[in-house]
Image (cartoon, rainbow, N blue to C red; front, top):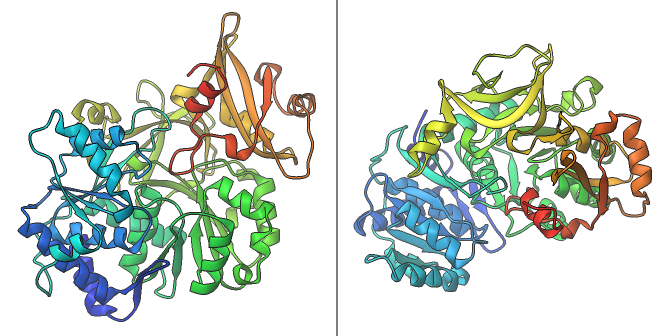
Length: 511
């Protein structure tokens, strides 16, 4: 394994003229990216950044963000990915928590950063220095040629905040070793960036692990090209796939369904160039998989399960699994360098078919939560990372997600798993999206309720859906109430995951 600084040096020598990163306005080869990283990295060191120091980055999806990541790594600092969707007060908390000495800021985000510093200035004596994209960053660059690497494999590479879909966001520390291990997992098990000819499209935010650690880093290590979209839209996907000859991308399931609904996958450019679509962070059932295969028979479909704390990937389904009815609804089997098992509350291994918490170990795991030793100790117990996710495993080793431990519904003395009901709803041809939640109830402890989004041009009533569910599930699992909403009404995290707590609150169902 190598540190990111060592990979920068190696690929500068190997692929000096090959494109490394591309966005709508900029293109950098591996040689140019290395020179950029060394120049800015040297400036960061001259400004006082030492090994392990936090350097904040507040930027959207862009080549500038990628330059910042590699520059901080070259300097030996820790890249802190701030969520550009945060309000100034939230950003102020992140800045204070991570102790950033310098923040590299995209020009259009300066007002947000300045307001966050103003909030901090009321209580803090020393504030980080803002270095703004353009003249500010260029003035910081100094010298030329490689920087000496002051990091080790166990040095912190980055801090990525959890999505906050199940609580307060926490800063997850990922080492150089963990990032490399996850990259090798992606390349070996899912072919991400495994060939230098690969051109990967990044449409999810770089401040989350999927884009940064599962796309940018593997493509960089392999000498492949990352094309970075500012945001996700039908038009952007079609344009970039055609213009940049995109061969692979990652889409969360609701993005994938949207592209299938709007006919994007039938576009000639998509049909010609796109050879692999990877998905995760949501449910995917047979109707979706069959529709994708029918629309894009020349592309492989991959599904993955993971979490930021795991670095992030744990399990995957490959194209040969997708239409196998025996593993429909499965989150797959472990990646090469990930070891998983299901444990009961006493930490004992459960038998196949029994419910247990997914626990993980391996070289890609986080070092811990930044500045939160108690939370880190709670996450790592008995040598395993406890994910808080419940699953069962079949005799072939395939895992089937059931629910978040904290979101399991207790109704009338029975345990109900929202994922089971959601997966069943997805079997109905009219359902585009489904969300199931438990709502406090005096009689039942919790009442099962659902929110659904219908596919365009379809109709279904709550009675229709209840009747359908009764054909597949026990009576106590049938939602007492089904609410219909539009896809754009569902609250999502910046990573595209649905935030159930916000949805509950908006419906007056309690958080």
